[in-house]
Image (cartoon, rainbow, N blue to C red; front, top):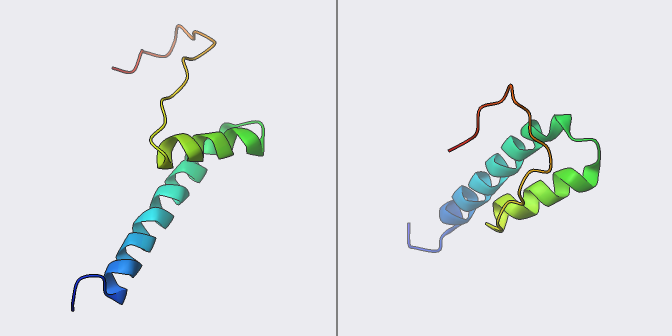
Length: 63
């Protein structure tokens, strides 16, 4: 198939849908839809994550 074909378009669409599905699954603990929406914008737009406002000593820091 030539570049830019329907298969390439469908592959890109499937990858985007998988990313959204993973973010949605991760966001079940969020209290509002707006928080999930911000997570989508940050992940799909590659925006910087804000610093956490709370410290939980039982969670190890992510490095």
